[in-house]
Image 1 (cartoon, rainbow, N blue to C red):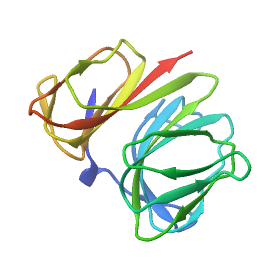
Image 2: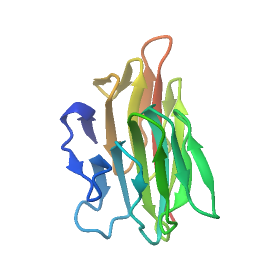
Image 3: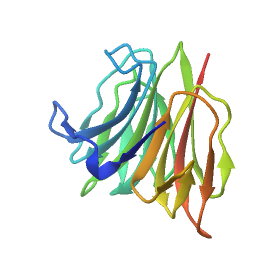
Image 4: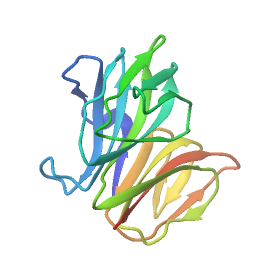
Length: 181
């Protein structure tokens, strides 16, 4: 298991200049032929997403201004805070920002190898024995093993089950569970 703090994750600028990405993890860690990867992106202006064939994407808005994802005739969807939205990576998508920036959590999975299940948790729970996962604390204090996690911190793992314990009366975290086919 590995832990991260959003403020310490290296930043990569997008080629189109419309934002930046902080890659949290990638399995396997080398090359473009990943099974799954997790990242947090800042969208600074309207622009097109990179088309990635055979990849399923799940995007969850963490904070910021309204973003409309325009997938042409396939969909037009307004991202809402903490509500995951899934779409195919080969679908051309344009992000339209009305004002300001948007911070978004992204999970990408290779369609023929694995699937992601993304949800917001607000109470203590135990993960299943999946083949991987990522958590990101939205609010409150959470315990994972002997580690205390607060807002903008998280963890990722390659396999196994883990107990995530909410330490205060209220709190939320984004839980991304990966299962292999």
